[in-house]
Length: 110
Image 1 (cartoon, rainbow, N blue to C red):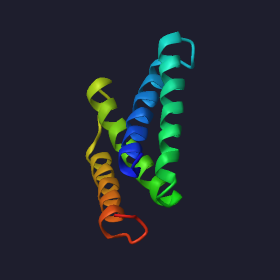
Image 2 (image 1 turned 45 degrees about the vertical axis):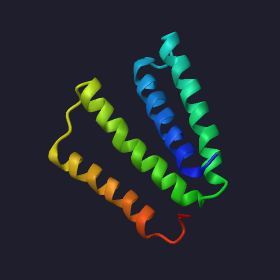
Image 3 (image 1 turned 135 degrees about the vertical axis):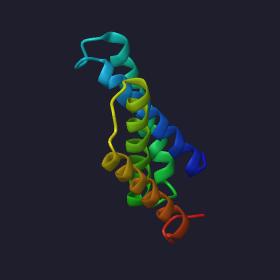
């Protein structure tokens, strides 16, 4: 499987798992707990496909950076957790960092 599609699937699975983790109430609720375990398992499996062809640091930077931004957005819209201006600016900087890595870094295979 190509690196970027597998990395995208890993990111989405991790965001779903983290969202379910918040709903699991410390693993006391069955369905959110199952979604959490399945989501993280899926994320790690697909992460390994990206790691076959991309450097570990780059994969992890993209995975964690976009995961942070997407989880913050999901929490903002779904759970009504407010983001203030510094948080929004910080998330914007994370996105800029991911873009810089993907556009300008010679360590990423294009």
